[in-house]
Amino acid sequence: MTTPQTRRWVVQLSAAAAAGGCGPSVEKPQIEHQLSGCAAVPDRLDTGFDRDALEGCLAQFVSSETNFHGLTIWRSGTMIAERYRTGRDETVGRSSEIVSFDRCRLHDVRSITKSVVSLLWGIADSEGKTPPLDTKVLSLYPELSGLARHGREEITIRHLLTMSTGLDWNESNYGALSNPETALFWRTSQARHTFDRPMVAAPGLRFNYCGGNTAVLADLLVRFTGQTVPNYAEERLFRPLGIHDWAWVNDYRDRPLAFAGLRLTPRDLLKIGQLVLSDGQFDGRAIIDAAWIEVSTTRHMATGDGLHYGYQWWLGEVAARGGLHPYIAGFGNGGQRLFVVPSLALVVAITAGNYGRADQRLSSDMFRAIAATAIPTPV
Image 1 (cartoon, helix red, strand yellow):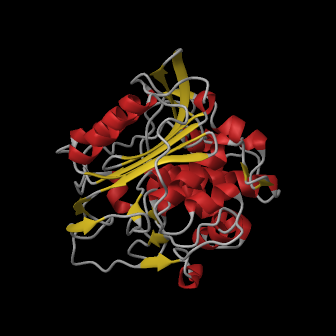
Image 2 (cartoon, one colour):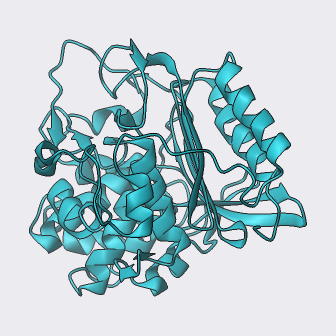
Image 3 (cartoon, rainbow, N blue to C red):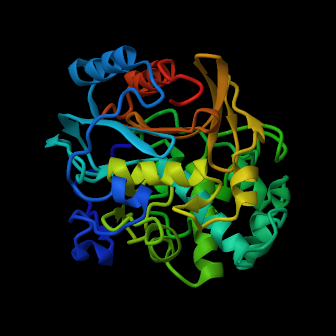
């Protein structure tokens, strides 16, 4: 999304960042040890891959005219390879600039932020802090009782999670003031803005991508946890994952952008993927209930383009040796991608700067090329 640059933007940094998350790690568990610090990790291209074919993918990533920025590959408990490039980039809401990316440079993950909000909801759910998923959302907003008609009164939390509210919402006109997502940056009540839309389908019948859904989920998290979303994320998710350096861009009213504002390093994005791959566990520690990972990464809605949607996660299949393999993914504008392929024990994270462009799909093409080099049974 592009927005007027005359407005002030604030980036909320983790208080733990000053502790030096990019410093050398000592006696950390295996996963955190491999993914922490700024030191290079040697390639291990023959750990479950056709080495020559994977080398070809890495060479293509480095030499491509596409504005790729970072690529990290993890498989079966091992960092396989990572590559970084210099390219033009923009933090959400700011002017673009040329950036030299590396292992410790933060990058927008854009709408992968939605997937992180889903993880936070799952944590709050396991703590008994959130209402049941079939709770009618407008029943939680008495001040919006006037909107509880024409079918809006039937919209549940589950519909927010699955992008199936039935509300009229179109984010395809990237950067335009008519894009309803734009107003989420400045409206006093994001819930009112989201629900004050015409109904075009009954709730639960049709997938319709809507950043307002995630904004409402985040607002409810604040209400039920008593903490800001970044603070809750740091305490319950980032700190347990060893994520020390991160940022969350705020909107014009100093609210963290729940639908697009998170910034992480590629290595820490891999940690999010590893958490999903391991059913909510990280280095043997349970961070999220396995039941939430299962239900949130189950196909709930067909998206109409060959993919499916869970609870703020995209679901599809990728071809590798041995056939098709289901994947779980977070997608972000510009080519930000996080792919988790459980049957291959594979996690791939890609960052790029192709915001609002059709060629952001090339990040997904790169993932498919990498997955095709995987040997089904890791060596």
